[in-house]
Length: 242
Ligand SMILES: *Cc1c(COP(=O)(O)O)cnc(C)c1O
Image 1: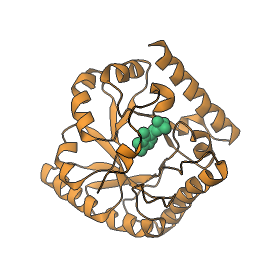
Image 2: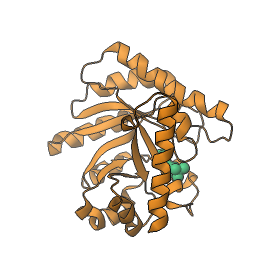
Image 3: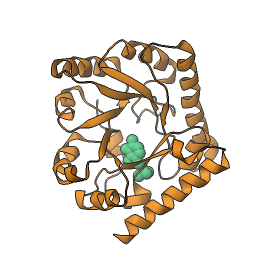
């Protein structure tokens, strides 16, 4: 119990420090708990410290843990690669925002299903800012076009952008990823697309959240630094076939 609480306190301190160092209000940056592989009992401990925002990468894990956490009323986001054949399932679990919209085909099918169920969904457009083949996300040069196309699907409310920074120990290689996302946000804002909000930048994880905050992150997604190392490599989540 204690170490999760301590880890969260430490992360909140890191967020605050990074905000203050870059003239930002710490209230502008939300902490999202990335809970893949973490059992519901541990997520519960984190929620009991007052955290509210959690996200899974796989529908199967939401399905397993969702009933156990219902009483704590978490805000559920989804940050994993979404296959079109899982769309129906994701709508069963109170997911309020999907961070990983990266192709028109996915957005269209999600829109069709939402229309059928008379629902709406907040979404972020995921951009592959590191140009790694192993990562999902729309190529930066096609992001504006995708934003425009998705904006025409009236059940989907675009709230901003998401990216995963380059895995590197070299800050000079990570920062351009986040800067690029900010840049795309600014370009999208200039287009003034009806129904599109560009407030959220979901970027930064356990290892690079300070850099992301310096570059404008409004949501940082943290797993390892709160829950400890995972057994599965991230490639298990990020490198599956489409
Ligand atoms: C696992 C995951 C995170 C959290 O990464 P950590 O390095 O464990 O903090 C953030 N974003 C996505 C998309 C993830 O899959």
